[in-house]
Image 1 (cartoon, rainbow, N blue to C red):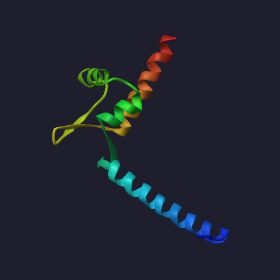
Image 2 (image 1 turned 120 degrees about the vertical axis):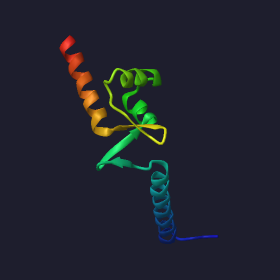
Image 3 (image 1 turned 180 degrees about the vertical axis):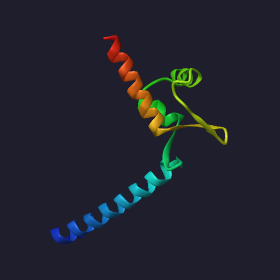
Image 4 (image 1 turned 30 degrees about the vertical axis):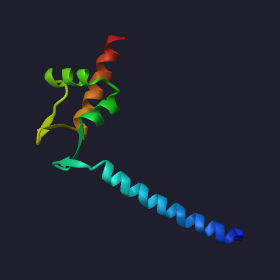
Length: 98
């Protein structure tokens, strides 16, 4: 089977469009955005990856009150703004030590 370059490019463009649509659908399914008061909520896994810490460290930050959290249906969530503030506070503490 022989196809010319124009037809091949057309097929490839349609194929790439389909891949892009599938990619968007997978992202929608994979990362549902939970919000409270119009603010994005992160789950434990999101925060662990964002801060690059262990689950034990995250537990310490919760129990010490350094990182506020919310329990919804038995699952822990964190407001994105609280996590960002925690990062700022941690950065400021470390800057003052040096």
